[in-house]
Length: 258
Image: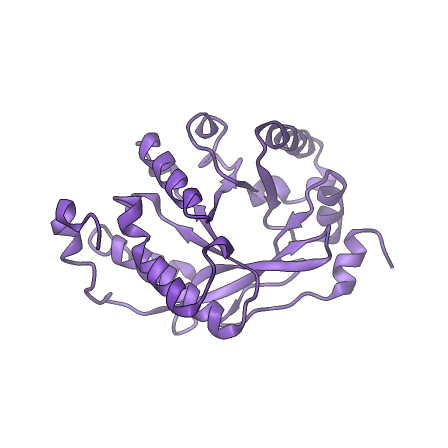
């Protein structure tokens, strides 16, 4: 693997098995403008049906890199097996990526083996509050984008991904945090904040996705503000090792069609 010579202590552990097993759940990403599911986000779950926390609580500094690599491969293999024909969105931990070109190799090899086009891969940056080297993070973003992949900044507006991060980082997508989305149809202060995010995204040429949409009223309010890409329980809950669907009637209701 490229870069291993400079990181021998890490790379000696690259192929070692994890001390725990896990699987993936999938949640649909909805495009209201075109009335369709355009992809799925892969979410880690315990192989015994346990929560994401039951898995993530076992990740430490010693197995962080192996876990990040294994998540990418597992998500790709399952999405391919289940027949996902759209985008696959995968969370990644910036601190697990010591050298972008080296750390993406296992993903690229898996994608090639499965015949999965790299332009159907989106990586969501999570836990940005722990990243102190913004230049390194931008290098990751640039590398992935140069390879044809999409990069999203997750939980935008949560405090973990604040405005100042956009001084240094240039993602393709901002995923609006669920705390801003929750009850937004009846929360004027949240509405003001989301309106400003919409304006900001337009000026920076960054697309938006609203996550955590749980009610028709929230979905309609967001749609009315031009946020046509959404995700949340209103459309479908994540399902382990399945690609859940949402009904066309749900999408029509949001758009005011009957």
